[in-house]
Length: 90
Ligand SMILES: [Zn+2]
Ligand SMILES: [Zn+2]
Ligand SMILES: [Zn+2]
Image (cartoon, rainbow, N blue to C red):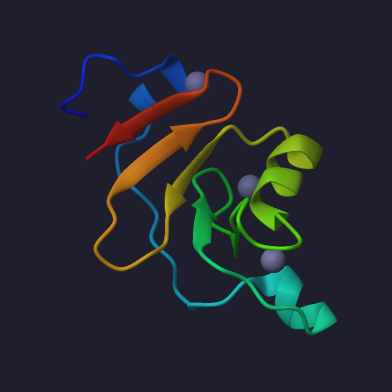
């Protein structure tokens, strides 16, 4: 990571996981829509952002304890750590 403002969680990431499918798994199950997609960097699940009605990425972080997400949007290259509120472009 180039930035020196990262936390330990982001600093531990060597390869950023990118989405395989461009959809929120949880929204697909319930037939809901989403705005943007985020990929959990611990388990690789792709879920929807806080602008989406169901906020599955944040809910996943809270329930699983997984700390870091990456944007799954094409052209966006950033990581965010929930517990440290750290935002890093890569
Ligand atoms: Zn962190
Ligand atoms: Zn969702
Ligand atoms: Zn996860």
